[in-house]
Length: 225
Length: 388
Image (tube, rainbow over all chains, first blue to last red; front, side, top):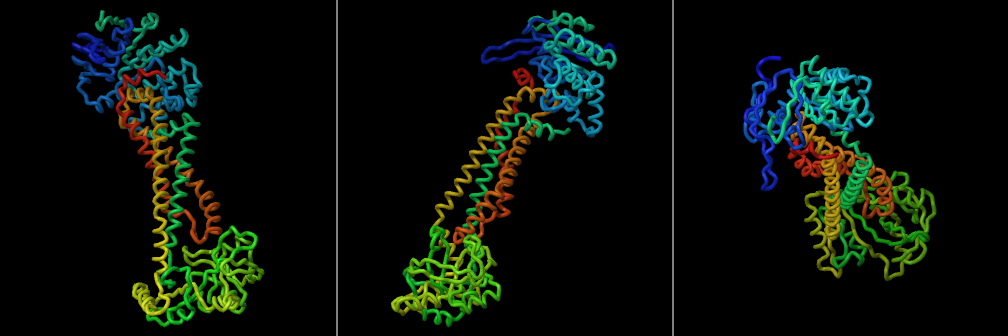
């Protein structure tokens, strides 16, 4: 870990409008996340965990404040630039896996690489390697409906790392899984962090999952506590 | 895998829905091809009619006859190359009287000189000229009734009552699309000699070819002028103008067919658009995932349009594939054999075939515009929150 934070949020506010009603989800939030850390974000529903994750992942923009990742204020990027930045720097792991049902495991993993200039054979090779990392090289030709929940999430993890992003964000990655599968997934996240030096941010309600992280942060009413 | 693969794989997601949509587009394209082919076949008569052939008939109406002597005088008009005369006979098959075909009493010495787009083998033509009861029939008519050279045939007269016996001397084929291949032609003398004195030596109309195509109007006027001071005046018109006039009279029907073909396509486009919109709604969350992974709204638009255009193209190809056996092979043959006077050449034109596929693709494109636009406006965070 280096001393300079990989992710630095300063004075971040996020407000949503519903008609005339304004809902302040994040309130003057400052946060530093060093490179190579594995952090868990916890807090009650509506505390702003997922919103914070979305801001760091460049899926959303703050109403006020700055979100610097690797020294770049991503809130100031245009839509296309932000899309490109996400495709190069962020790996997403979703609670509901969100695999494309018509694609095989290999094709699902290959998806982020379609945005690169890599040749087809190289894309396939990298996708195969990613599936090997998560232990699913023998399920490459299977569609999501032919996989268990745990296997689907492992494909989701392979998709998150196939393009070698700096940061992996995981929103309730074990929320849909039984304990054993959840432990396998958390073990994989640990491996990504330790063996592949990925910075991992994980939103979770599960204290057992949070304990696998090196840092646990708690959010309440839009502020870190 | 590439971006196109994803669009194509989406098509197989709901196979029943896709199949029904493809069938729907195919039916619309089949209807379009049928209607356009009818229009084309209808116009073929005018487009391919001989430009150098004039028809001269009674000025009051073509139903009234001309004196036969007019024929010799038309031949003498300057600019006329060859001439012949003929009578509409209007007889029917004695047992299959609902099956219409044109039958005419013609002058065997001159008829095929003027109608040189009807081709008869020389030996059969010679045999016909020598047989007073001989008849030359079109190839479609021969097929329709199973007649062949040498057969004895009886027709029942309507305008000229009685049972008329003929011998098939030959079969002609067409050298031009506008030629009705279901005609029955026999010796004018055979008819004339059987008529009572008051009806003898009258002809239905005179057909003539001219030396200079560009002078058709002048020659026609000269023919009519020759009979201006007679008890019976004439009206002369080129074969093409005559056919165009006939088509003009049916313009309301043709316009209606045009409108129907467009309405069918518009309805199909709305149905296809609805199907694509349903697919987009169902896949909102997946589009959210793609946006999160770094795909841009333009990619999502490409997926939606690609899927719709592929369905349109598939429907177009299936529709066109069905058109050939249904429209051209079955319907076309039947029309040429049984309604050859109206549809002498009923085939799917290459422009209609190519146009049908192009329209199917455009149908897919336009049907996808609104769903694609809506998909492009999706917010990744909102889309990821959607269920299912």
